Image (cartoon, rainbow, N blue to C red; front, side, top):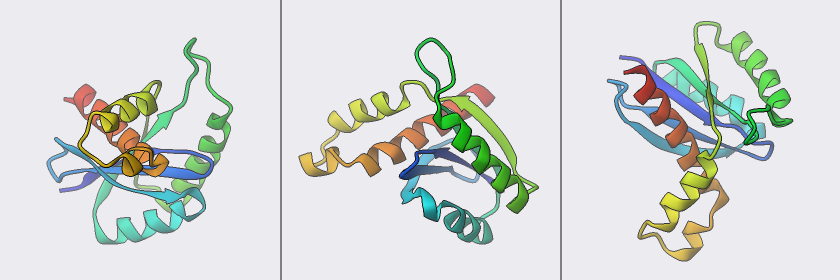
Length: 137
């Protein structure tokens, strides 16, 4: 069965999460440098069947889109060219990084790992994907 994947896009790094084959549980996959994102997507999609890509939509508290949205739209254009079969879904990602930071702070990880921005991006992608799954079911 196909999986869903989520991206927490950033200019420097992008957090990635995927679902199990039943699309019930989101799990962090990794964080990559954004310049390597398309390469990772190609590699992952060659190995695993992915039919949905959930991409966080960054908004300010008042609901206005952040400037980062422009970069995400360029990414989406590239993804549609490379993976025309993928259903692309956007979901509001307000507070995902803050919630990820809080979850990491409450974990039993060592302090150095807790401060990892890459881990925050991965956990943010996981929260975005789980939020999407919860809304879909």
